[in-house]
Image 1 (cartoon, rainbow, N blue to C red):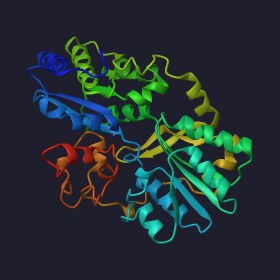
Image 2 (image 1 turned 30 degrees about the vertical axis):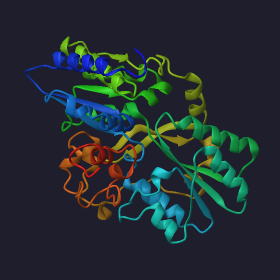
Image 3 (image 1 turned 90 degrees about the horizontal axis):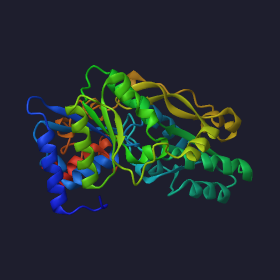
Length: 368
């Protein structure tokens, strides 16, 4: 099918979804990726589907899943007089436990620089030899290779005032954590296209093999998502779950081995905290000992982050439950009132890929 389908093709796919949707029970389908959440919101797809198909937004927004305890660490780093924080723009407004953000820290004198690539962060280090530049390495398997390359380049060029605070997270362990959570009810996954470009198909096989769940790696056009839904519904109808690729123009079954090799040269799996999901074993990436000089944790003697129960963030914010698919954004008591894109309380409203931001902009529940 062409990348851009016409209305007739889209209508035909919707009819297929309606035909395959079971009449006797509701289905919960999770779109894991934040880019899918935005694409679904923008297309108005939720409103076009049968009432018994419920699309849930998952933990695939890289900014949304950063845990409060990790935010507190980089806010503390920003307070160092000799440190320049280099970050992508999405992290700038994410509030920590006490509501403060990097933007607030910058307003109070901290040196925070928005960059558009890891190479920009390296250039920043070269231009400021008397300062320590700490790059906030957020994201999933997709962004880890470029961050790894920046560390390799820094070592090769002898750039000693550059380091990375790794906030990287891995998608498959989070999916397994969701399936082990008794509160979470998911019948199938729209799997992320970008992450799968790197990791391929094999890391998802456990979904069907161990949990009897369907999964389709899906692209981001409206017809991609509809076609992915059709493939999911066919698996569910035949009670034959497995993992297949709809997004064949972007994903190879084997992924990109070279990208994974670069990541593995610099990083190793480590336990990581996720907003809403807690501590998930081997779901993050930390810098290997051979690159310890570029690990901000080692350079600044940062202790292992651990949630401080006495300093919980806003308890009324439902971002954690939304990321697990337990609640929809409009079910949060702050949504659209105390929490809006202009005045966000939780990261799901801050991020351009956040579920709350998508619902606010593209549904009748928001003001967009």
